[in-house]
Image (cartoon, rainbow, N blue to C red; front, top):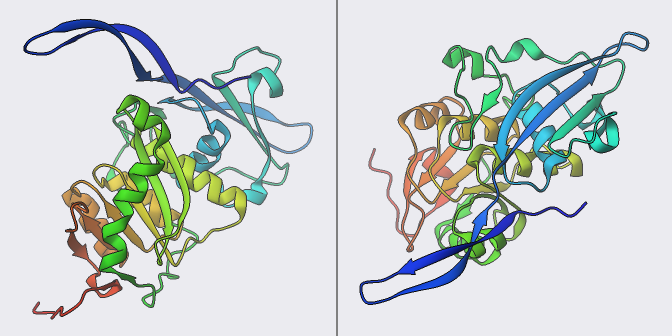
Length: 289
């Protein structure tokens, strides 16, 4: 089944002097229900885990990445299959996806004390408390202080990101998460109307490729760096996070707690380093703190 990530609609384009009828491309936003099948043989059960508003495409990566970054599953080996319900279930529902776990796997549903309804603008609405989303990563304690990136490489990343944002170029309405090597090579890029979805898609892909933990990489966010995005990156073992926009105060606190290098306002050959500046190689830099 073809996946449509954009939708064409008629519009009237108005300027100070003219108005014309034209067509405009919109980023598609549709709900995705994530279901989980788990349990021992003969005692299998299916549970609705989340409904998230997303841009269709890479839905299996989104579902797997979500389950991993929320700490519900621990690694790719927990998963038997991930498929839309018009394939995996007895229902013709393309906006429902089911993740089937191996019989011996017990999902850690208690790791998140919230109702998993998320919108494109908020991935942690409804969390019971900050402690409820401080999910313990398998890679805590593996943060590598020898990971480093040169400032001149960081300057190039937003340009590479923009060149490779296919749907954003058509619509102007999507967030992106991109994974680079510390030498500036683009490894993965995922787009979505929700910033948290874009990152879950990215981590879900890396999970499937067997790349975790994602050390010696740089995560670039097309917008701001929120607490939840830093938390998801920590779950994947990422040590260097850069954002085109601003970080939140809570994102900075979390990055500092886990010794993560957090960079904001990365554009026009400038940036701010908020935490763990020792991983950024800057010519003629003197640490005066």
